[in-house]
Figure (cartoon, rainbow, N blue to C red):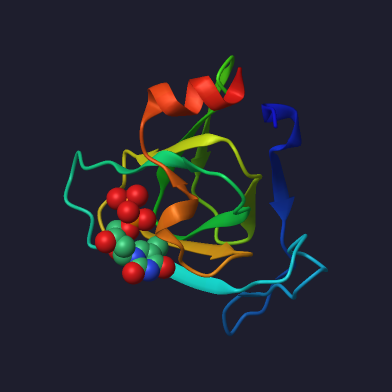
Amino acid sequence: MSLDKVKLLSLPKIPDERGNLSFFENEKQIPFTIARSYWIYDVPGGQIRGGHAYKELQEVIIALSGSFDVVLNDGKDEVKFTLNRSYTGLYVPKMIWRQLENFSTNSLALIVADQPYDVDDYIRSHDDFLTMKN
Ligand code: TYD
């Protein structure tokens, strides 16, 4: 798996003077069936989340509020996305090293994934990740 499979998804945005609305559905805006959603919030300044890869899991990451950076590495190349729009999703396939950092105050990261939580799907050692990639 390489970084060319990573993509930014433009989610629908229904503008309204009462407040904007965005949404996603399985297999439509989200390119898989969601098995799990979780969110990261109240991140103290300077903290880093993630710092691992998944053997099978694919995910979409959305900055519902505030901003943060997602750093992705496929073992060869690295790319950094700054997410700061609640209608933009970042699709991350399996076997990509990913780290979330530079969280703004009150930022809220929503992650939807195609797998339930499975500790055995995590690759937490970067050396192991590189070995599996090569
Ligand atoms: P983890 O994915 O390791 O977060 P990070 O990579 O940012 O350090 O999750 C942190 C803890 O939360 C870990 O003990 C497992 C637990 N957890 C769940 O129980 N279910 C979940 O869906 C997630 C994402 C984490």
